[in-house]
Length: 417
Image (cartoon, rainbow, N blue to C red; front, top):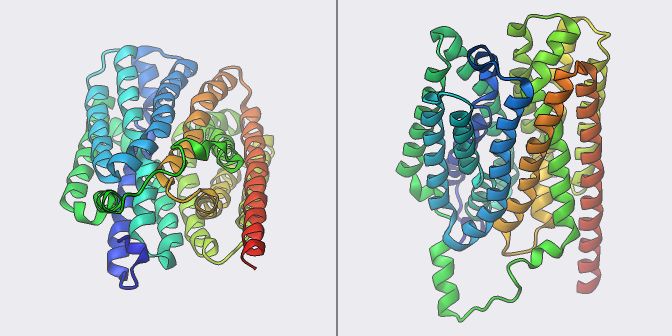
């Protein structure tokens, strides 16, 4: 029986599962940033351009995006827990390979391994949360899931660039990343009982009762809401890609601040986003029209990025506003995940989350080289304007999903009357 269906679900059980999934998700986001904080060190050692380094990010997200869509089917077939263990093992391998890379090819292999590890995390995490966490705490589970991801993004520049700066070795920084993944894997194996999504039990029960598959496994792909959710992730991730990889050098050029200062914009944005997700977790469980929360918060974030892009502000004020924009996107996060849950058909959790979250990977894949080329061309303000435009397009997608969910609910109520 799923834990969320049990009246005896306890706070302690829910908190344990939520905490473990949060830790794993934080590790996956940390590995999004395995290489970008080391770009200045890689340029110094190898003479790469930002466009070449942006291609490494693209390789990560091409593999992650394709793998994420496929891994949803694997999760639905074999269960989430073994896929989680495989993913963390891939991260450990990526850190080791990066630490021994002798050139671009070695870094490309490391990026590919990290992308392979990143692929299953959203289907895995959301499947376990939906199966093990009680409905009353599911919004908070989504909130912690998002917060931990932001904290992983925020920690990566500090750890990777910090170790590289302190030791003078970017290779040692990569090795530390691999060790971190191995530690997280050990924690997950030790607490594997809290990560069991009941796949074997459900499969055995279906066999005993002669259950048959009513719909084709790809039937969910006919739903417009699935592809609107996909497009939402694509556009919002395009905006995030700019912040993560290129906001620091762009602000350095716009405001003549030291790179050591502007590099903190990513950490500030992610920490601000984590704070926004705390508030968003309470809103997601109490508001029916989730797309309204998403629209207000993300449009506010877009407005702040436009102001930053003008170059009119004092440098420290611009840094503060860029970081504050993360709060708006953070508030939208739990509502976004809850909206996907409402839009998904029953029995296709892994497949739907895998498919729609692959829009995240496609966004990173396409946006990284585009924004990198803009930065090489000196279009520093354009990076912030482009990020704001992408957020606005994401708002349009979320609004259409919300309208569709509301229309479906109205039809169901009329049919039941």
